[in-house]
Image (tube, rainbow, N blue to C red; front, side):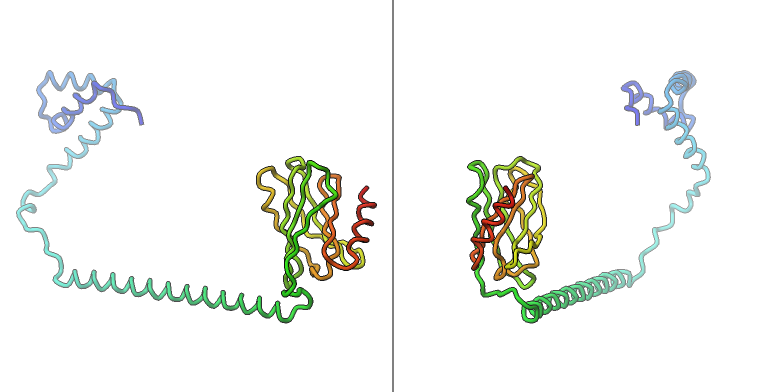
Length: 238
């Protein structure tokens, strides 16, 4: 919408009288000259003219009658409607809480069954903190391995590689098999947020590996036979 011009303010004070035909000849001629060159004032004058044409249709006798009174029970009906809405809302909230509680209980029961029934994943085994000692001096990699019913959860921390480097994480099993734990892209400043998982029990894990770009780093896990496997992996990586 265009901003109102300062000179229009005075002219618009006369638009009501103009629509009712109450301006003298000189005032009317001056205002009409302004309306010829001002679309905004002309549009407002046309809207007021429409209202002025409808005024004769109004029946003054109707204004002598008192305003109709509201029904005597209107307040009670409004209060009853509000009360019914509140009760309905309370029932809806209770149903949602019940549904959420049931879903939570079902999820908890499923998790307990998974822990009890699934093979492997010894929950009594403590988490292991792994440090990579075969890395260059400017690169630091360490991790925490946590046993779960589904396998092993891996919290990775990488520092010193180029930002944007794709890091592939894997575990080595007792027979040298590689089990992928997923990938993450190293970003400077948020590298400690990489949490991955692998479907290999921590009790059967012999080594943790990270391939950062074109370099592979291997660290042993505290299990029998891990040292020999790591030496073999390091020879393959070089």
